[in-house]
Length: 114
Image (cartoon, rainbow, N blue to C red):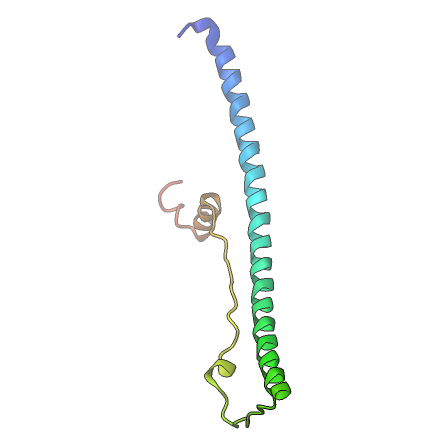
């Protein structure tokens, strides 16, 4: 490597490093937004599935009534009616920087001489 060009090479590498850090920050922000959007859509999907299931049951009851095949409702509650709806929750993992911050605040890295 030529000593004349090391300064230029160093500038170039610093610029590249800054660009990469900015890109990482932007991508992390975009990923966080997408994860929040995914969680909201999963909640909406869950609500939609519950509503669809209820509508399907009501449709069957209506068809039976229209066809004259009325059924006697039993007082026993079915297992499906007892079961609460499934709720999906997504939790974001902590990044390494956040984990290190937690370790430092807990004092675990202080003992190591950091």
